[in-house]
Image 1 (spheres, rainbow, N blue to C red):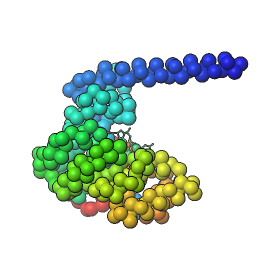
Image 2: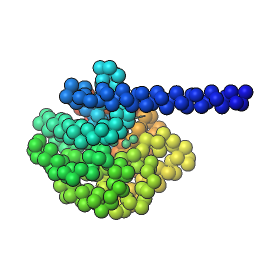
Image 3: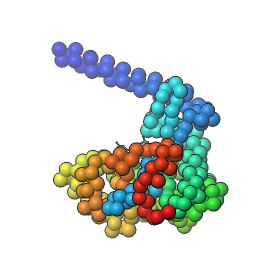
Image 4: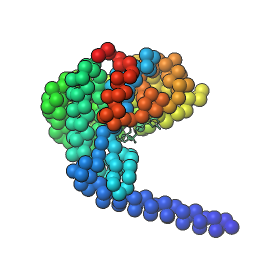
Length: 281
Ligand code: C2E
Ligand code: MG
Ligand code: MG
Ligand code: MG
């Protein structure tokens, strides 16, 4: 019986591996030309000030709807776009979409909002990264202050001196830098003091577990961040109880399904008309 179970388990693992490979292959196939065919869309999820429940910005999230595969999660296709070297073009497109959207929000009277854009490792490492950000802002006539760039620790620690240099240039332009998925990396603490970031986003894994022990972790992260003058954004807030705990711990900002799902551009306009924004328009 044991042998049979073992054999069954092995077969299962093998099938799972095959399925993953076939899936990757399909994604790769259909990813080719997807941008030109207009299959991508940027969706926007509100970033909230937690105590006042006011919107101060939106995170731009890339969304792909393939006519063949249906919706594919960025977690599944971004690594493949990186491997194929197309992430650069995709990233530049997201940045321009998001800043174009920001331009329109401002023209409609929402003058103090910001937009937060995810940046992949390869994008960040490109030598012309900072110049491209500067050009994209200039194209829309926007100050750096409207933009947050979300980078992961993994992207920053591959070449710390170069990262420090790039981040300092961006900060000098007024651009904010958020350390995304904070707490899921390995060396958060040692590098945090060297890198000129001004925001940390606590990964939703920590928000999911607000047991006594889990809460102690979140409390410690918030205390550390505040002692370094960093703003804290909590990810994945799904229920009121989580928001209440975070407010009690002094966490200033957050996002999650409790407030809103990522929305299409047309839905955002309707949403903004019906909610409080941090600064009156
Ligand atoms: P992320 O930057 O940590 O983005 C947050 C993810 O959590 C998004 O997933 C969002 O839809 C999801 N989320 C928001 N609120 C909740 C909630 O209350 N509960 C739960 N369970 N999830 C929530 P999404 O859109 O699937 O994106 C996944 C990841 O893909 C992102 O994680 C980011 O790392 C990456 N990504 C997305 N867009 C881009 C992009 O334009 N460029 C790059 N390089 N990466 C991107
Ligand atoms: Mg993010
Ligand atoms: Mg995140
Ligand atoms: Mg995450």
